[in-house]
Image (tube, rainbow, N blue to C red; front, side):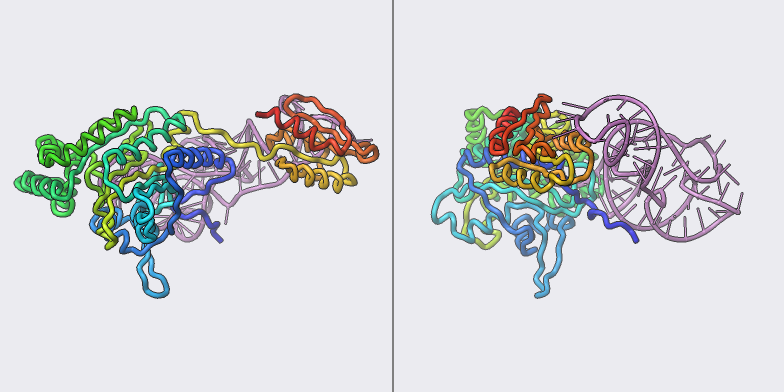
Length: 423
RNA sequence: GUGGCCAUAGCUCAGCUGGUUAGAGUGCCAGGUUGUGGCCCUGGAGGUCGAGGGUUCGAAUCCCUCUGGCCACCCCA
């Protein structure tokens, strides 16, 4: 009988890693909330149609990376490959934008994409992100970018590079697509197979090709075809970022793989990650998304970041916190007859808010203390025959190698004194 | 989805061109120390050699398939 392993492309977050996860997630919550963003949670599966219409039916994500299934009523559902479409559905569906505008929300949670797994790319991965829905302003684009930037800052994650670009409005993009198709069509015969496909399906992606890079160099530049309003909007984003002290590099090759983006788009890169996966995340403005979903029109902007990738970088930089101790104190009896008294002390300490492990083993005292040491406990409470007889207890400081005997009513005070020294 | 590399104890890894009962370090458990931890000494447990099939007198070692990981591509988080 074969052992059942975790499914391909998934991983377990074991207790030893929980400290670094908590560190990352709490930092993101804290920074987002410092900008007035409120938490939102949406289902991890949605109607397949939400993604087909929102993300774009002909994007790679929807075309070949979704986990799709049918429920008993024959409805087509998909595990969410990203979160923006679901959040927009939830916010506008609940008419939150009628009460305040813009609606500022942040989220964290698992996303699913069925790509070939490798380091920094799993079937299930975790994103943290924010969305700002209901108002169109370059200052809000700059605001969400600044949140991400402050988040990296809070983690002390150095070496992040912000790349920004503008895709213009729908009219600009149509014009640009036409220009690209016109430029590339005469070369169709010599294009690589991927590019032939891109030319028909998604011409913007032609710019990503490495094989036909000589053609890319001579291709029309989006910026040249933007109308004055789109350029002004983008320039306002840039100056707003500058005032916020967020260093941005303009990179006209940033395109993003989702159809709903317009105007501002951006990515956060880190060189310590491998080539194709050097992106920690990205985002942009999606003013047309609500309409694609048949919801009342509402502009929006936001980002999503890959938590696993950030943790990978943090590990490499040595800034991720090590595992937390299992507990503050271990209570152990010296011999079996004192076990019940020890259990009572443990409960008493827990009531006072101390994290306590009760050693129920029948090992020798020296082994119990060694075990307490390995749990990372600061204090050990030792209950032996003498203590039970005298109504006392030994409280040992495992860091200072010092101990004292106190009357059992003073147990909580004595333990608190010892563990407070930890901080 | 396409191609390449890899899979031996809980963990990190040895195991030469196929040759008896598969090893080391570390961790775990116990004893040294019948009430005091981080060091030391001694002993023990722990492996269907990723799974299945094949070649062979004989397979961890060679071949095939599958599973999983890593890397590149595609693309993205």
